Amino acid sequence: MVGPLVQALRAHKGEHAVGLYADPDGQAGAKLTSLKIGFHHFGAANRSESMIRIRQHNVDAVITGLSSPRGQGEVDAEQTAVESGVPIIQAGDYWGCEVRSHIKPHLFITIDKYAAEMAWCRDPFVKICIAGFAGMAPITPSTELIMKMDELRETGAKIIVFPDGGPHAAAGLQLLIESIRRSSIQVILITRFHPKFAGMRMGSSEQTLGEYWESILRPLRLADRVRDFSGHTTDELVMAADGVASGYSTLLMRAAVAGKVPITLWTPATQAFLKEETGLQETPLMMRGGFPVITEPQSLDSLFETTWSEVKDLKVYDPKKAADSVLKFLDQREKQAA
Image (cartoon, rainbow, N blue to C red; front, top):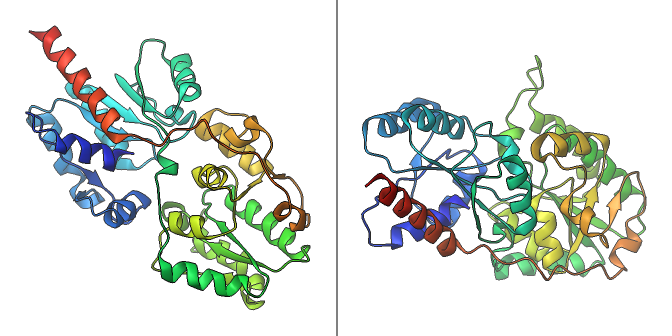
């Protein structure tokens, strides 16, 4: 959400210069690069640069995302802003994600009225901008990718994307693999593990989470049921595939909006992590009803033969609307200070 918002702010020929920082090795950095949005690297080596900018320059506001896991740069920027008396604007791309920050923003940019109500329950005085759902911004898969997937479909295969990371990913992946084994139809799995989590160590072990997930995936790879499709974004893969299987990724909603099969892998680990990350007891798709939820291994055959509910009420994220709300907020602060 932040990248397109910054683009929209830069398009205003006003008095506000806008700097954008991101971790080049994280998911945000990859997305910004694919969208050709310029940004400063926000690694451990130069994190102090932004802290200096906030403390020593006349910064009007600090805008942060609410990623999972929370980037240390986001946390540091918010804390520095508080210490420096600079207003904080947060952009949330998932329902309930405001709980990921212990700092309450002055302006909160969010998805829809339900997400706004959650934010107001936490802070009744926060200013809200409802700007739409960033996870359903139009994406057109490349012709090359579509042709590759069509070749797989000619064998009768169904293609599923698994995009998860975090402590719930292993249980969800195991549940999905066992369900694939029980299916009569051939299922091809594309995994896109969350990059921030994939590089994390497993406790005191030298093994990373990504390596552990790959060990779970190994039997399916040996059976030639896994494809990687490197060089394509996860959003592209979702739009070209037949379905998405995940605990609660925003890509489940993208799949539902696009008429794909959105399979919720509802394990105890997912329930616990969703509660920790959003405060929710159920995912937004589960609350809507009419979409497949798997709690134990089962054949996936019927899921691809069923017509699932449609999502028609969500609006696509409008970065211009978000930018206008930021500029209006800053203008009001300037008038109050005058």
